[in-house]
Amino acid sequence: MAGVPGRPHVGAAGSPEPVVLSQVTKTYGRGEAAVQALRGVTIGFSQGTFTAVMGPSGSGKSTLLQCAAGLDTPSDGHVRITGSNISDMSEVQLAELRRDRIGFIFQAFNLVPSLTAEQNVELPLRLAGRKPAKRDVRSALSRVGLDRVGKQRPSQLSGGQQQRVAIARALITRPEVLFADEPTGALDTNTSGEVLTLLRETVERAGQTTIMVTHDPVAAAYADRVIFLADGHIVGHLDNPTAKAVIEQMTRLEG
Ligand SMILES: Nc1ncnc2c1ncn2[C@@H]1O[C@H](COP(=O)(O)OP(=O)(O)OP(=O)(O)O)[C@@H](O)[C@H]1O
Image (cartoon, rainbow, N blue to C red; front, side):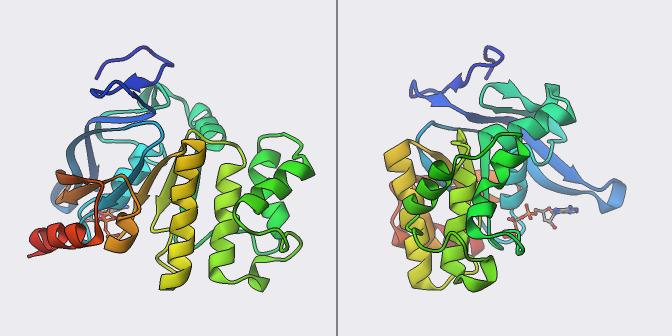
């Protein structure tokens, strides 16, 4: 898994892998209270693919996502994001990486309540000291199907609309990788379908590398690949998953 610093890793299939984990372990706490959340995870995420991460509660899904996104550092092993080993980066460099090259979407939307939809979408650019062009902000909202709500605040929007604003905000910087932690966990079935279709379209249209943690087999079926975690290990994967195949695999893991 060695690579040239600053260049994306190239996976076995010959495609670039903007995110690569090599023998990653993560232990929380010490001594008797220590919890091993990840126990030697090695995986690459190819450019332009959509991966779902599934597994029983406590299997390490969120920890994997946090380490893969540079929000947390592994106890051992290496994480390379867009070609850089995050262990070699300072806090400032990591913050810049997260700001400029990575997008995040969370279950709880995490919009700023006092800002309008447009101002929320502009926020990552403002934080990076860039002046957002109104045209870019409107077109980001338009791409997620929200042409008319730019001046509204989050409390005036439905859950699905709020998550669309969060997606527009995550994509405004054109990040190399989009991480989503349970993005449909707070949405009803129909709205979930709309949000997942939007994520799928972004992968197809913009080649957006997307990694999503989910508990929902129907959501996982929107991905190109599902990886399954159990007890901190990757224990299997499914390519071109169907919800039925995902349910079968999960039943085996939880049984
Ligand atoms: N900050 C922390 N401090 C201590 N233990 C933690 C911490 N974060 C996670 N853990 C533990 O690490 C293990 C993996 O947690 P993680 O949240 O990654 O699992 P998960 O698969 O995402 O679970 P869920 O589906 O319930 O969200 C669990 O045993 C959890 O209790």
